[in-house]
Each structure stands twice: as structure tokens, then as C-alpha cells.
Image 1: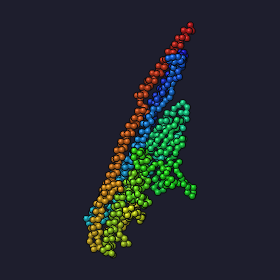
Image 2: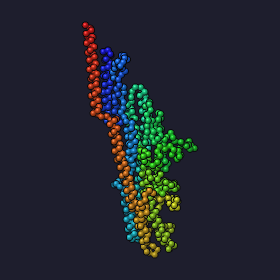
Image 3: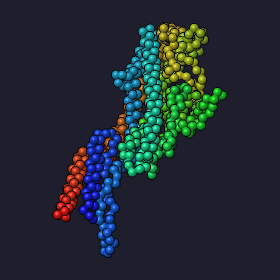
Image 4: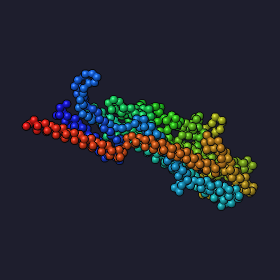
Length: 558
């Protein structure tokens, strides 16, 4: 190769080293940039100049170094595992936070309603009543504590409803965020494809897209695939979210009764139209287009425990649960075998609502039943007796329904369940509240009705109630609430342990991934010295060639 041609070798070294230094500086300047992936210079030899093809070897001269590309360093499998586990971690984080909130509502912290005090106070009032049922002070205490019991119960249930509403707003915000991320990914797809259609690499845009994938993975279960043109297709819960330049937008269906949102796929929705041309979704159409199948069992084996949005929907539930649903009676008052296991048990808030309402329902109906039984027994002996009866001759009921329901449901075993006795539909009898002495507890023959007072006491001591169909241990009223709180605490402890385990897993994967994609200042400084020395070497090479040319020209010029 001629000396003039040799200059090109040095120039190629200068250019490549200069570009490599720029890449290193770019890495260093983004040392703390969230989502940034370190870039690496890829060098290659330029085409060789073949002088001859004789044996045993060809005679070739190299033409220098070529700066082939600046590539990102990523590990596909680490990315996939990290995103899956971060989604699982977010799922249990939401569940754990929900249980902590419920503990506060139930009175396990100073911010709660301290409902356990209301249960204990009512039990104490019943005990005092059993000692002397005819004493006006005891009667007044009994009615007052019963009123406090219902008032605090309604406050607890209302707080659970408010928390459901808060989670419902979180659903709307998460769906909005997912749609925004999907639109951004699609826009980045177009930019990346346009830039990489030439010779450049859109590494920074790819960083933005990968960051969006990381965020999207915490909200739902996703999978993705990049084609040869740089377009990234994203599937969420097995359905295309971004594909072929299109975004499958997620819409929200608002339940007209509860106001709860159900996310569904806009493109999969089969709308119906009313007489005015307004479109709406039938229940069957919504079921076939919904994003999440919340009736599937939650399991890490089947990867159904991934995503904060799914966890929020599960924790919130789809309606306000009541005690009747523990007996597989749906909100419409119809018996549906397996209703509790399918629709209630997997929802944190709905399960607590149903179990809490069952306690209130049991206390209310039991006390009312004992008072009614006492009045009927006395009437059996004395037909004209007004004992424990109002002015119309009806047995006094300490608790009444705010809106009288009167409907019933017959279970397969023949048991008839009276509906309508849910915590939000109960109030204290206004007559007894104003005049507790109307209870009297003095029979027609002027004797004390100690038997009825004793029945009220035993009602609180009977261990015949279970939290839900899947719990076998029977408890009494007082222990029921304690067990309910313990169940919430134990479940929270389990979810807390899972969350901590997931945190360790996610941190481990994150650190492993950072070792590959993260910028190391020490490594970059080492590269900077290496490329700087390479630049200096190329510069010195050019100086040597230049001096040789100058020497030849000077010598020939003489």
C-alpha cells in the first residue's frame, strides 16, 4: 500500500476512536438516567485489498477499522423474567395494602372504628341484663349498646364501601395509564422503524420503549415480540394490545347499580343499540370482551397472579357483598351452587364484607327471634297478653329493616333464609330507642322474665357460627369478630411474606439485569482510557506516515 493510502488507515482509527469516545461519554452522562441501557461500540475490519491469490496464502492489505454499530446490551430472558416477577410482586403488594387498610377499618389501629369495643359493650350489656332484666338502667343500657353496635357496624361497612370506591378510581386511572403506554409504544415503533430503516440505530428510543414495557408489566401480564422491521407487538392477558400499527384500546363499562368499572377490549366488544341508537353492552357481550377473567383460580403455577390492575379488581370485587352470599345466594336472591367460591372468596374486600355482615345479621336476627319467641310463649299462656308487644299487638323487634324486604330464599336443605337483613338496611326500633322500658321483661303474672334474659346471654355464648363455608371451626358472637380480625391479619401476614419473597426475587433479577444493561462508571472510564490511547496511537501513526512523506518529498525535491 502506498504511503498516501496508509493515511486512510490512521484516519479510520481516528474516526472510530472518536466515535467510541463519544459513545462512552454518552454512557457516562446517562449514568443515573432511569431506563437507560448502556451502549457498546461494535468495531469491524474494512474490506481487504487483495494483491495476489497465490498459494499457500493470499496476499492482502487491510484498509483499516470500521465503526459498524452502536448496540444495546440486553438479555432477553432476564428482561422477560424481571417483568413477570415484577408484575407478580405488584399483584401481592396491592393485596397486602388492601388487607392493611381493612385492618384499620376494623379497628386494629387508632384510625379505625374500634368495632371490637362495640361487640364487647353489647355483650356486657346482655350480661348485666341477665342479672336483673326488670331494672330500667339495664334495659336502657341494652338498647343503647345495641344502637351503638349497629351505628358502628354501619360505619365499618361504609368505610369498606368507600375503600371499594377508591379502588374503583384506581382501576380507571390504571386503564388510562395502560392506554397511554400503548399509544406511546406504537408511536415509538414508528419512529424506530423509520430511523433504523437507514443505517442508524434508535437506541435511546428503544430505551424509552423498554421502560414502558417495564411499567406495563407491573400492571398486567404481558408478552411481546419484535419483528425484523423493529415493530414491537405487545399482548396483554393473551390479547393484542399493540400490533401492526394499531392499538387495541381498553374501555370501561360502568355498572349502573354500583358504579364499578369493568375493563373490556374496545375492538372485541359486540355492542347492542337501543331504540334511540345509543350503544350499550349486554352482560354476555361484556363477559366475552372483558380484559380479565376474575373467576379463574389465582395461582403462580398458571401465572394468574400477575399485575396490579388485576389485583385491584380482585380486591375490590364487583359489588357490595352481604351475608346471604355465604350461603350461595346471589344479590338477586337466587340460590346458585358455588356462588361464594366463584364470586366472593377471591375478593379481599367482598369476603370481609360478607363475613362482617353475617355477624351483624346473626346478632340482629337472634335477638329479634328471642324477643318474638318470648312474646309468643306468653301469648300462648295468656291470649290477651301484651307482653313484649306494641300497640298493634305485634311482637317488639329491637332491630328493624330500614326498607322492608320480606323476600326469602329456600336452600337445597329446606332452610328458608329471610333476605334484607344486611348491615346497611338495619336500624333500632324507634319506640324502644325512645323508651327502653317498654321491654319490661316482667311477665303477665308480674314475675321477672329471667328465661328470656338468659336466652339472650346464651345466644352470645353459643359456638355455632363459622366465618365462611370453607371454615369448619364454630365460634360464638364475641369470638366470631376476633376470628374475623385474625383471619384478616393472618392473610395479610401470608401476603406480606409472599411480597417480601417477591421483593427479593425482583431485586435479584434487577441487579442481574443491571450488571448487563447498567452503566458502570469504572468500566466506562477504563474504556475511555482505552479509546483515548487508541486515538493517540492512530494520531502518532499518521504523524509517522506524514514525516515519511515529507522526508521522501524533501529528498526527491533535491
